[in-house]
Length: 120
Image (cartoon, rainbow, N blue to C red; front, side, top):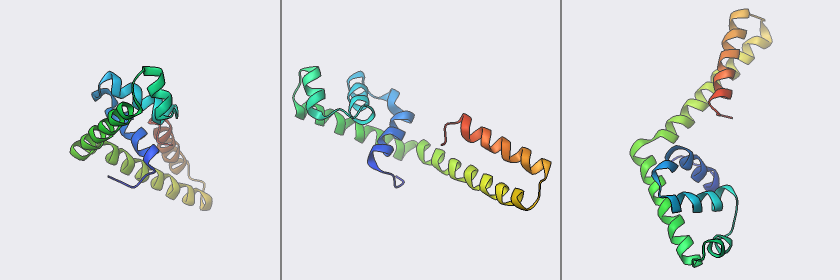
């Protein structure tokens, strides 16, 4: 897996593979990683132990990581984002030297792709 802060990494993996988790796993991941609730808060809300919440989250993390190891969609997404961003930066450099309509259009297309695909 590529290097990201754990929170960002789990959120990215959840975006790609969250639908493959059980309803309970999805709920706990959303509450813990997206809404920043503590294990205790989730346990209290669902009338389970903190250990049950922890075990469910660990299992969900293992599943998400396993899916990524097998499919690699999040890594491909990240690599594609980096390439598009690099291409856009190169076009920006060129535009600083020369105002070329075709280059500007290419830069705008790249920016649209970056924005539409929620890369940034």
